[in-house]
Length: 64
Image (cartoon, rainbow, N blue to C red; front, top):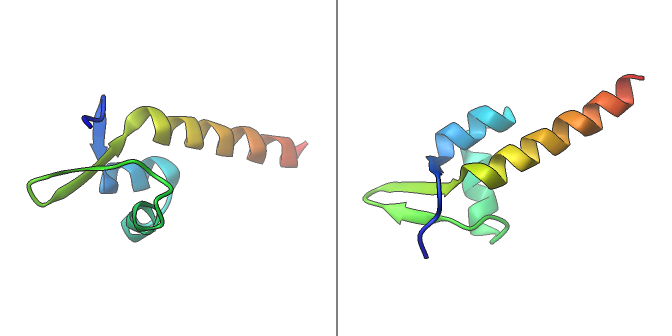
């Protein structure tokens, strides 16, 4: 399978405010689809952005 609009685990971690090892842990736990290119692992930007958006919405509700 080819992931559309792939980003590295490091980029995904930056978007979510996590350590890159947390992204790799999710991959190993089969919670994220991934693809290996050379020595790098890639995940879908769309999936990561949707998770980041949900996280922001959830945090926004707690502040009010």
